[in-house]
Image (cartoon, rainbow, N blue to C red; front, side, top):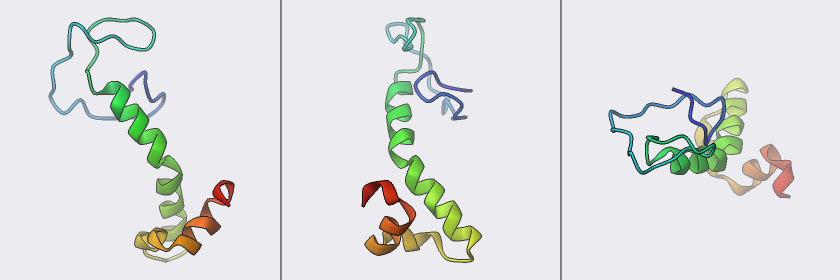
Length: 79
């Protein structure tokens, strides 16, 4: 399933039923009420997830992202 809140991102609906009151960003009814929240979360963590992929590619543990210096080096937009 691709959510409207997070274009191109494949997520699981986790078996939750769509809410008849919830609407997608383009106004369609019956969307899962977590779609907007999931989209916001995924947008928030994307840069760090990509940085962890880079760490893995370098043979380093993804937990290295917790080091502020490493995080700054991998996310230059936050310097």
